[in-house]
Image 1 (cartoon, one colour):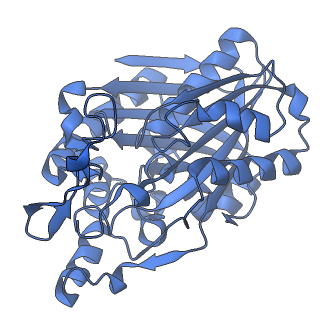
Image 2: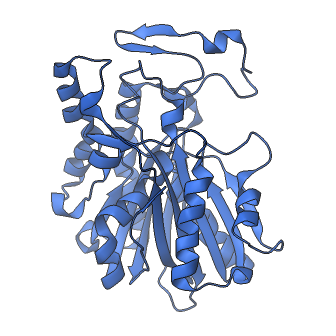
Length: 351
């Protein structure tokens, strides 16, 4: 287990962008009215945001980043690191981070790199960005995290289509020598990679005619190998098996406890998983905010989006200790404790 602390780095700003297009699960006609009601009750998603044709993850991350740069009055020449975390990049090649580096007006001397991670991506990205800043002596960084999973979901797949939404986020990180420690615990198990995957489209199974053929997987589930395949039972079992021990290990390492944490922000997987985890940890409901019901599972963006949409006033006006817990694709999972000190957080952006 990779458990470590990073000193001297603070979160200065946090922004999120979602598409204007709203999709309601109560209008999902692939299933019956009774099934729709049960789906909403189980997964906890009433509506989601879907991108229009031509809009990418990087477009939303760019909007979020620009709002931070303007609000914080940062000079782009001072930004030395840009990390883009997503599994829905603009192109197979080149890397999207360099495109964003150019569009945001960052200097060519800035480090720009992509990280391909989904559900656990925000915590992993925060760990990598803060550790690089600390190790390399970097002063300012942008962590851009998001996904447009709706484009990878088949309408006739009731296991995925009602669940996923789209979003892009930006986090501004800054060197702060006297700042508190960030604590991280990162884990993964590649033996479970098939639990959440898109079988075709990569180099293992390149696109062919068969990639576009719909197949019946189960009642109410039809998809092609170019769509997300989700093994709900395996993901549920994995989440309950790994997440709570990881949280407890980090708290034991950091010397913190849940009683002193102001809010616990889970990756917005689905209502059944998240509520089960909350009850296992015996956390009161008021300490666990949800954005799931109105934005769905937004993959890597779900934690920062939840903070912006549900805790915007709190993080701007107060000093808070947040525990971030992310888990999913890979399989991979991660926990972080991060102190937020009156963080700049603009209103949710729509694109």
